[in-house]
Amino acid sequence: MTLAELVERMAGRLDAAGVAFGHGTDNAYDEAAWLVQWRLGLPLDALDSLGTREIAAAEEHAVRTLVAQRIATRRPAAYLTGEAWLQGVPFFVDERVIVPRSLIAEPLVDGTLDAWLPGAPARVLDLCTGGASLAVLAALHWPGARLVATDLSADALAVAARNVARHALGGRIVLLQGDGLAALTGDGLAALTGDGLAALTGDGLAALTGDGGAFDVVLCNPPYVNTASMAALPPEYRAEPALALAGGPDGMDFIRRLLLDVAAHLTPQGVLVLEIGHERAHFEAAFPALEPVWLPTSAGDDQVLLLARAALGDAPSGRSGRTCVETCVETCVATSVGTSSGTSIGTSIGTSSGGPGAAPLGAAAGTRGGA
Image (tube, rainbow, N blue to C red):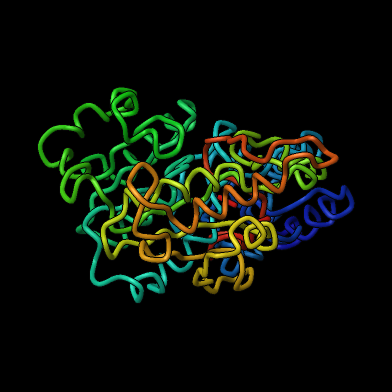
C-alpha cells in the first residue's frame, strides 16, 4: 500500500464514522492526511512528493491505531498530535485550551488591520489569549510591538507560556491571569505565569506603561457561543474547555462587560478587534447604536469586527458622562427584566478564547461558530 492509498482509506474511515471537523481541517481527506503524515513522522506536505512511497506493515498498524483513537474518543486531531497551526505557524496544544483557529488571524497576518492604524502599534493587548496563538502572530507581524496577553485560566496560560517560549518571544509578551480587563489591575499583575515576573522588569514593563497603560490594538476572541448552540455542539467541541466557548444566552455575556470598559484601555486612535462568530444578530440586538467595521475573512464578512475608540464613546466606564455602549447595555438589560425565561443576560464569563469553527490544515484561520 502506498502513502496516498493509506490516506484515502483513512479518509474513508473518518467519513464513515461521521466525526466532526473544524479543528485544523474541514474535511475527512485533509484530516486523514494530517494524521497519517504525523504518525509516520513525515512533513505535512509530504503527500505530493511521497505519495507513491510504500507503507510497511508496522507503519500501517500505527496509523490505523491512531485513526481508531480519533474515531473512538472524538477528540480533535490536534489534541492527539499535540500541535496545531494558525496561518502556517505551529503551536503546542492540549485539552487545557481550545484548538487555535481564530479568524482574527487572517486580517492580522494579511495586513488588513494595518490599514486601520495610524502606524505600527507599540502596545497590543490580547484578551482571552488561550494558548497565545494570536499574541504570537501579532508579535511576529508587528516586530516593534510589546504585548500583554491575558486569560482567566491558569491552565491556559501554562500552554501560552510554552508557545511564547517556543517562538522566543518571552521578552516581548507578558502573560497575565485575570478576568478580562481586570487582569490589568493590581491582582492581575500579581498573578503572572512562567517568565511573567521577569517580563515585568526593564523593557518588559514598557508593555504596561505609557499613555496611562493604554493599547494601540486590543485583540479579543472571547467566549461567544450562545446557550442553544452550546447544547448542540458535537463531541469534538465538547472536548474543549467550555469556559473558552460559552457566552451565555445570546453569546454576549463577556462582550457586554468588555465594551463597557475597553475604551479606557485604548489610545486615542486605538482599535478593538473582536471575533463574534455567527452571533452578528445577537451582537446587533445587544448594541444597536454601535457601527462597527466588519472585516472580511474566509468565513464571511460578518464574524470579525473592528471598533475604533471614538466609536465606543469619549466617556469610558468609570469617568464622567455616558457612552453609547453603556446606554445599549442598560437598555438591553432593562428589556430583559420580566421575560418568560427569567434568565439574566447580565452575567459574565471571562475565559480563554473560544468558539467552534473549521480551517484547512496549515492555512488561514479557521471558520468559527471562535479561537
